[in-house]
Length: 457
Image (cartoon, rainbow, N blue to C red; front, side, top):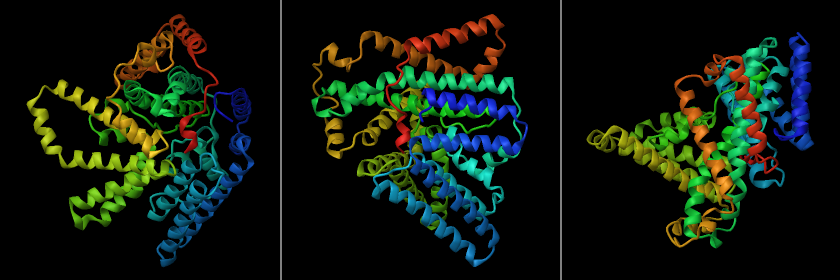
């Protein structure tokens, strides 16, 4: 059941009415769980069976780890639980024709919960209903964000009453997500697909153009999904973690990963990179470099089966190692140049490196990736019709205006909360903005184009 479909909208509306009609904590949780079960099983009943099995196993494994803490048995319980959860994920990723949607995200949630219980940084959850909601809640089920138990489980312990402020804030955040998805991502998607699926038939300039545009499509698609999840969660009274923080203003690749898919970046930092650096601390800086490589290779493998994803992660790790090793040199260069000029070129460098590395993320065959990279600067005799990659001048104009508006919104929001500024506007002005925004979505949106990209992970 995709977010931007009539069945999903109807499910959300019915759940909303029932959810706020009751003042009972138990009934609110049961209503949300029922909605989540319908949402997941709408795709495939097997997806629900797998998700429930992993959730139930994680719940009782957490109780067992807590019961036997401070004994030799607890380490064995944690290790076997991790092996089983990761093994299940690997089986479905590499050995099964059926890949349950959302399994990567809720498996990571389960792993973080068990590790935190083992570390004694989180209280074990005794309420099975709350834990099932933590694992299966529909608005974050398909593509996260990856929530930590100590952040999300306490929110399930209280009755949520209807709040005009939260509902309006949630609807506005949902609107931002829809805008990013249907006006930007889905406008670019089909045309970039036509290039990347037939790279050997494209000109060099078309390949370069598509390479530079793909990070924007991926960002608008995934960040759009996250805004929808956050917005719907806010409507139901939940605070869902942010996943993006203006990644394209990053000065380095390391900074980019602190701004891009943050719930995953911080997950691998806390549960892979930090333990690895502790294990390799006797190696000095080489231990840090080794930890970075392993971490990013794992991150790449998480995204999919195939060497292209491994190479994608490896490239990210190598770039960050270089940035770490060359930090003193970069600092000297920055001090010798104008700060704004240096920042501008650093942002461009970071974006281009990320865009090129994403070719391994987007293109299935390694040979096609290397063909694309080797032909980025060949065949620059393309006509204007070729450069449009199938998009009309009208669509390019819409895309340009939409991107400008998005970046202005993100910049202003980084300084002051846009929604708070909007609330201070006169009622007439505010509602005119709402109607204009809604009208623009229906006029300029590309509805029914494709599903969210990260749903496949």
